[in-house]
Length: 240
Image 1 (cartoon, rainbow, N blue to C red):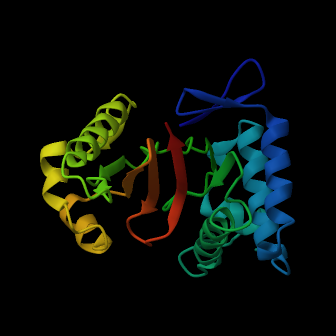
Image 2 (tube, rainbow, N blue to C red):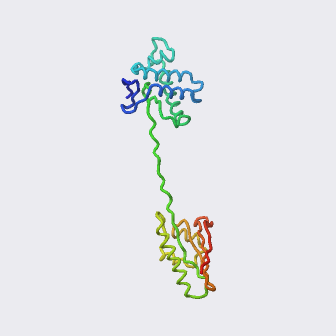
Image 3 (cartoon, rainbow, N blue to C red):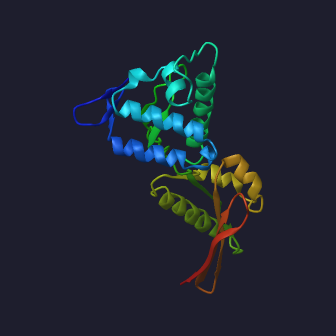
């Protein structure tokens, strides 16, 4: 329901209020759009209807009155014989719908002509609900580091280093890390990145190798994007 209140503003559904100037500004924006170019009769129809509502004379927006005041029909105009008001009202509704879905898709004040009525209503555009997108889960599989040292005892060292890396990575919030019990079964599959990604549903893979010689240890590691196979990071570490 549209009402006129004592503060010279128009109420919509008895909840939202608009200053007449804001409605008139919206009206001018609508009729100035390309959709209303060469539609002088529709512009006149819309202006007249809006001004009658703003003036508190919505009751005069009847088919016969509109035919006489807007479409220059004679005083004895009979809507049952001449349907011009109904025809132009349908055209106006279509134009308004097209405007607010194109040029006016960002306008906050909506002018509408409800079906079956010649009284325009004014609405506030509903706020767009922003859907929060949860960040994609980050996940990683740490493959058993390959022991490149001949001594069998160094297998314990390479496995221990892999377990320690997994343990440290689990401390990162919102980060899924494949457990050692699962990763250890992938020994020897370091090149099967696609198969590992499909099996474990991980986004990245960390793999590496260990070599000891003459009292020094060299650890190389690569962080790889599981989908593309591209290196995200690679480094080598030499220590006593």
